[in-house]
Structure formats: structure tokens, C-alpha cells
Image (cartoon, rainbow, N blue to C red; front, side):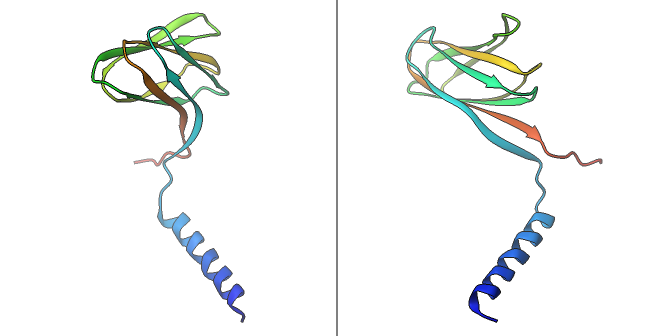
Length: 124
């Protein structure tokens, strides 16, 4: 056997073994990111199906701020996420649609929003 065949079979074996031994509880796909420049700035996100969303905010200061989650389809606020410094939260969204994350604070911040959903659930 040549080296390529041996390398290919070894890679295939390792991929198969790792997929059987390592549990995959959730998958994370990037959805949107943005920059909040001041009070009232917002980032919009389209979520194709109802699922959990992970919100990560990195600020340049340690001041208090809040992120308001606004549902663009139903035209109402869903949640208020108060924080101080950096923040990571997971939120369950009711349905697919466009959502707006509105920043209320005095400093600048970066936000990353990604969808999180379970691949399979084990029965215990």
C-alpha cells in the first residue's frame, strides 16, 4: 500500500472512532455580530427556526448596561438582559423571525449572537 492509502484509512478510522466515542450534545452556528457605539444602538438578527440563541457581549468598561430583546414580527419586547462587564446568556426564542438586540449603556460594546440547538438528547 502506498502512503496515501495508509494515511486515508488511518484518518477514516480516527474519524469513525472519534464520532462514536465523543458525544455531540449541541451544535453552534454563527448568526450575527455587531458593534454597539452608544445608547440606543441595535443589531438585527434573522433566526430561521425557533431555537436557543447564545448572546455574548464584550464591553470596554465595567459599567452597568442592558440589552433589550425586541421581536420584530410581534413588535414587542421579549427580554431585558442587565449586565455589568462582559456577558454570556442563552435565550429561548418563541418562533422564527427577525429579532433586534438594543443596547442601553454609556460605553461601547461588541456583540456576537449565534444559534444553539441540541442534536440529540440522551434519555437518563
